Length: 143
Image (cartoon, rainbow, N blue to C red; front, top):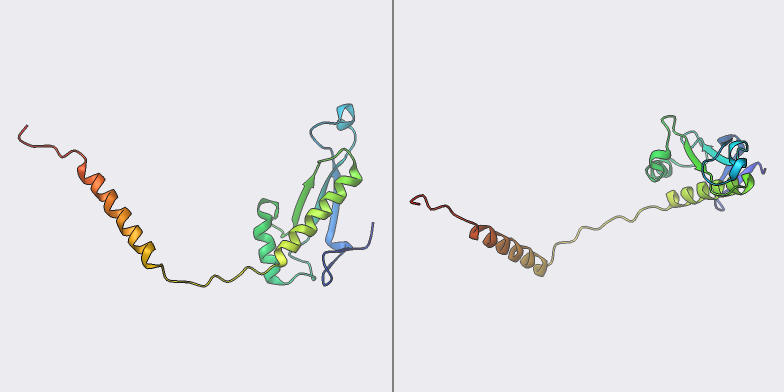
């Protein structure tokens, strides 16, 4: 295992930031599945990582969702293949992918005014809806 994991030209992740644990997988694998730990759990100490900036960490946290722990670690579980080595590669690739995604700064949205057409369409739709509701039964008190 290499000491570093390259994300892109600027960012590499050091060994101490990653921990791997092998666990028994569910799913296919016959009798083998109960005795061989092929599934991998890759844990990346994201919040403590010196190689990521704070905004990147925040974006990563949002992308990670449930995979983000209270301690600020990112935990990925892979039990796709029956090969431990392959699962490990997949997990690392996914982590790199997530980090690359988090590196992209979202575009700022520039507020624009609604077009005249869209305003008119909205008002027309409201009028039509009101008309439909207006036609609904009025009860004549004399009956």
